[in-house]
Image (cartoon, rainbow, N blue to C red; front, side, top):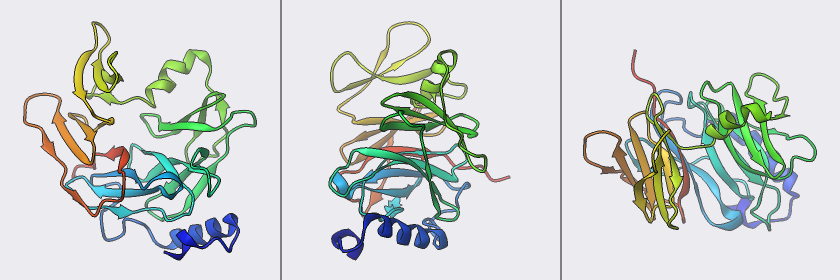
Length: 259
C-alpha cells in the first residue's frame, strides 16, 4: 500500500489524511456490530509496521483497523466495546510508544490524549471498570484521564488510588473478580494469584493471557488462541485466518446479550 512505502509527505500529512479517511469509514462496518458482538483487537506486524487488527469472537479473518506508517501497540478495549485505546509511535524509524490515542470503532475517528509535561513515554493503557476513565502507566508514573465525551484532564494517580489504577492494567479473572494472572517465578510461565495463598500454575510458553469474558481466560501461544473456562468445560481454540505477521497483545470485548 502506498502509505506504507512512500515517504514523500511529512508524517503529519499522513496522519491527517488517514484520520480523515477513518472518520468516514467505521473499520468494523459490515463485519461486526460495535458494542453488541464479541470481538478481539490485537497487534500485527513487526517493528514500525505494526497495526491494529480485529477478529470476531467466534473467529474468522483478521480485520485491519489502522493503516498509519508508524507503529500502533498495546490496545485496550473499553468495557462497552465502542472504543479502543492504544499507544502510537511518533517516528517512522522507531517503534517505541510515544503517545496515547483512542480509536472510536463506531465512527473510525481517532483522538490523541496528551499526558502532562514530564510524564515521560507511555508504556501501557487501560480502562476503569465503569469505562469512565483511563489509566496510563508512563515512565514518570501512573496517570488518570477522563474518557470521552468528557475532557481528558490528565492527573497523577494519588498513592491511595494506586492499587485500583494497577488493577485497570491487570488481567483479572471472574465476575466478581477472584484472581489475576501474574508471571510465575519461572521465566516463560504464567500463574494465577488470588487474595491469599501461593500463585497457581496456569500455562507454560504463553506470551500473553487475556480475560475472555467473565468465565474464561484466553492464552496466546504463538499464533494459537486457546480459550479455557474458569470452571468445568474443555478448552477450545479460536479459528482465525488471514493473520498478519506476529499477532500479539490481545484485548477482548465479550459482547452484549440480546435484550
